[in-house]
Image (tube, rainbow, N blue to C red; front, side, top):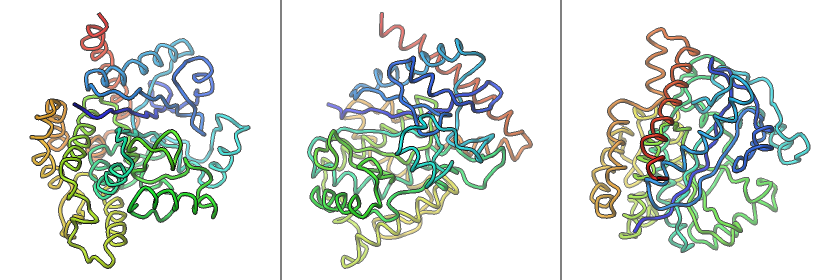
Length: 383
């Protein structure tokens, strides 16, 4: 038995030379399964909830192949990797739907800080109290998933000094989000934010992880991890997803992993201390990804992100093996060994490669990967 999993994938459209070009209004008008973001330069597609990792891989690849074919009809356009406006333009907001009042609010309040591409990983947990408990654990470990996925070291053609410039800039909203103690706590808090105006609607909770469902905050059925940068390699993305699922199975089988119970931080201020510790860890992970010095939620000790992930990997490997998806977890080791995308791009930049050339190479690699997965794995599944 496996948990259901689905993805929300945001991607930039543009030219093979690496320039981002806004086409989402045309894409959404002519292709089913794609939705617009406030800025016209990126577009989103969503995969259906699936349990099988094999099927998930193809659910990730096929919409991109369909989109690529459509972009080719429009001209010499392609899909771009990375989570920020790597070559620019960060000075202008290109509205995809000028009549949408929520988009107007976003543009006027946040500007292009929100014009990013990311991966949201949704994992089905139908019991709302178990879901809220899972949110607590994933919240304090979310910086690890950012470290694995970081892919935005550039902005306006320049190295920023951050491996995830996206998460460094992104306006987390509301500014303070507690560790929810129960489903009722989440309901009451959400209603209070809507009344105060710190959230414009139930979707306006932009934190690293949040409960999701058909009628938020009342009907909840899945955990949504929102912190990850765009991972264009489906195998790497499934590996990160497998790490998350294995960790959730570990929690479901051992509820004592709950940070509110298991942490050794002082009980009188534990919830607040865990939020402060985690917020700082997110900052460090955005800056240094796998090499970030983090503080562990169990006792506050310092630990390098790479080492923490390695420890988690060893803990959850038997669980993934028992549930039959350890082969999809294994590529986490490759990311730890070779570095995340941001680390690889930063290394090339420091070796003298131009940002545009780095992106052009990554664009070609992404296209080739998709074609190989489609032909070698997904087509035989259809047959």
